[in-house]
Length: 356
Image 1: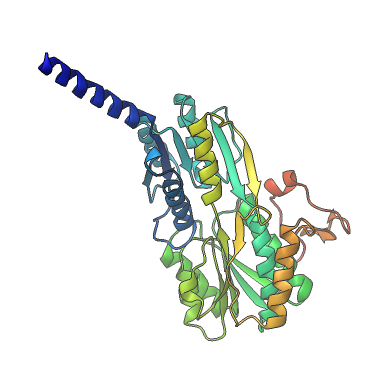
Image 2: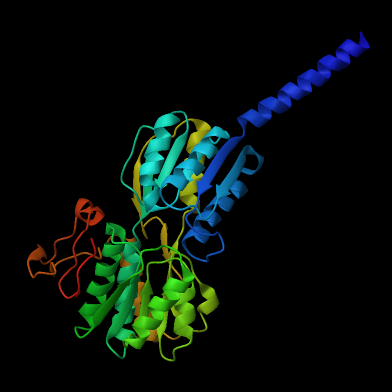
């Protein structure tokens, strides 16, 4: 009798443990770069860690880093779903079609794709209004350049990157009509060697300000070797260069979104949505402005940040012409999100062609 009771108790305990394990929400993250890049992937991983901190033992998070866009990402997502993930964040534009493909095979798994535009019943999309930060940086760059040549390291010719170039140029040229942008396309999100080579080439062409839409700190490292050159942190603070070329940063703050979406899965309220937030919600933040920026200019930049966050100023407010001189936005007119989301043109003053 005692043995039977003991076995029953053990079985009950095992059953409760199994139930507890089954109730744990499993959240997966697919990363295009290494978590130590101090940029894009680093900030997404900070969001993952925030999920763990917020929910403790109620969640389990897993991640795979350095996942190439394309077939390899589809394999990784499939394995995560097979391993019991309830929610999977796929954190790069090139994961869009693989996310849709895998989601179709696992209708009970929720997927969140960063920076894309294709959705399904179990696929949401999310991105940040990075162009808001580019506008602030453009204002700073236009006033701080001495050579009037600003270098821009661009990753891929997609609307997100084109918007950033246009926002930066627009605000640089409004305070400095003589400014010229030189753009190098590197066709990668993360390749320190290519990024460094691009930065050095731009500096050799006379650029004394370096922008980047790539993920490593290599451009700032290259700038640190060139006296008088400044740069900006990308996606993360990159504060290790704050005593050198880095004068401020765009910081992608994913943590609140990741926590909210995980909670929605946990409490059964998750639904497919499209989220595009910026400074108003804190998804886009600016890093500390260093003293290399003159005090008056820091105040101007902060005023722009505050105005954007409060909804009083939109970075794409007319008058703005397209590159060919045709009118895009009349004076006081504000760009609509549809046009911004599909932007495939340069504004007037940006030279060169967008690669096809």
